[in-house]
Length: 394
Image 1 (cartoon, rainbow, N blue to C red):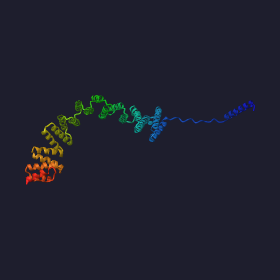
Image 2 (image 1 turned 60 degrees about the vertical axis):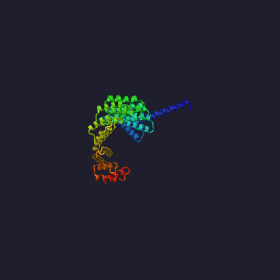
Image 3 (image 1 turned 45 degrees about the vertical axis):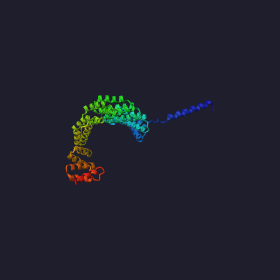
Image 4 (image 1 turned 135 degrees about the vertical axis):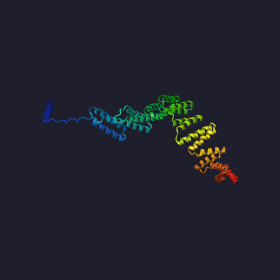
């Protein structure tokens, strides 16, 4: 076909096509639906919840963040009933929770550094969040929990300076637990970082600023464990000024007894007794006072307080000590009294029965003496003595 004819044919086809187009009706194109970011936000939130339930935490975070972006996009035209601020808060808390869960997963694998990154993400959300429906108290609990987890994780990772920083933050959020937090800081500095001077300085500074009895107690206990009696005593005295109660008197008494300061211990036991403690505690206080006087060489005071203890609460062991003492001083009525106290609790106590039998014999109460001594004739320790006295009675 000649070139000119081919070109003419092409032109004809084009004209026919154009003619056909011009003869057709115009096709109407449906407009695209208006984009609704609020609807899309709820869809993204539901998608995130699904991923979370399936344990796909990274995808859940992406969907929750997408939902936040869409809620914020919808905010300018949203109504109060759309609760955009509440929904944004929910998504932010969901992201924080997902990060916490990811941290747990990495801890189980021993990936402490990665876990800390996830905890930090969660902490950043909590600390920068302005509560909508969640209370400040609830938010503080989230912050404290995350800081505590960071402290534990960083310590496990061997990052002790970071651990101290997390405990410092916790002290601001959790002042009621400051004694335990200070204790943790103290031992990290002392044992993990081998920085004893800094360890005690941390406690000194905080105690001075807070003027809190618990801080001084922790400081005193730390000095006591390190063997610095003078500084420990000074810290206990400062704690006592702030909180002069039975617990404080007990702590200081125990400190003095542990350091063989018997007279000083008795001063605080007297303070403790003056608080009218429960019966069990009162009996213990009297016993300790008696033991202190024994170490001070004051037998009369020792016996006085042992008697007070037994009169407050039955104690067979202590009653036997008293019975033996009064046997040595030939106070037969008291031997009988305290031996009987022992036997009322321990009927087979051969020592108490022997003491009482002898006391009855000395009082010429032969019937009572025989009743006790006849039960001891076969005793490996007291049998011979019992038989001798029985022969004398006959």
